[in-house]
Length: 445
Image 1: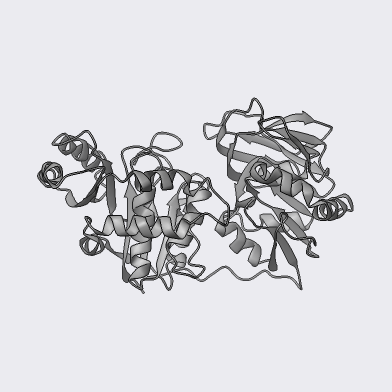
Image 2: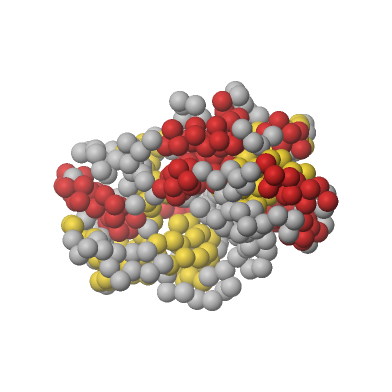
């Protein structure tokens, strides 16, 4: 049965306009009002979904932020995922990525494509620091570029006076985009936003930061009117995938401050195969007995000394992998399985020593982009994922590469998936929400 719920996508002309601040503030406001908030993030970002989960909760776990990405998955999968995830939720807040029409290839995979696919109204976040009536042609262009897009409202950012806002308000109304308010400049919040995703320590006061964001926005933005504009029809969800759990399978998943870049839908798929048992390579001394070890990405370089000091965990993981234990490691997880990790200042720390490779943060440059992956002999369907890292492999031994990897434009890249015994490791974060049988291949290694 189709139901009416509030759901909208926050977009901007470009990155750096304030989407994340507005998204987190709105999630927290609605959580304070007792609404069940389901957060979403356009694109492959791993950080924002974690922050969304925190903002959408008040003292509890909150709902996991879900990635919506039309490069890594089909539109049909996104529609099913969105409807299924909205079960039991009152409102969906979808944070866009980059500029509204920026995609992997032109607008393919963009926030606009996702909004059109899910038939969501778009609320623009526009940085108006040095702008007045020029907001009119800018909004007109975004509103009219694709007739299938519903640009319903705009929130102006970095507007310090009511008189400045009156110019912007008139500009928006003249082109048929409803003005919903503005945010004055707040330097403390701008600094806090910059470090929200970078500071992963448990002592960092994210709760205070998000509450301040919410209080700041609620003073000058008409949240009630936004929710009225955002009423949409949510199609009925398809039945959840049939459970494929086999016996007492256990999947050990690394999750702590160093390892936390995980697509939530990947975990949902793994739950179809068995019970997830989370552990911390930083703090735990015992590796759970498991049928599969999943070492996700994260910030191991920020915790290299502590990871190295936990010798008991490193030795247990090495014994597990060397004895043929099935292991899947991505990005930071791969770095942890290597012999050593060297930081930018030259300090080097011993890691698990499973893989014959060393990684370094020295002379590092950003590796970024979507990836298409074909595995040699292990899996017949094309897998898709995303690569994002500053570290590099400084030494590579005789590891077997079992993949052919291309970027979004079908150009071959030198990314690899390495195999050692029953361990597979790569810098690529694969999304298997739509290729739900992929973990079965890992169990069959």
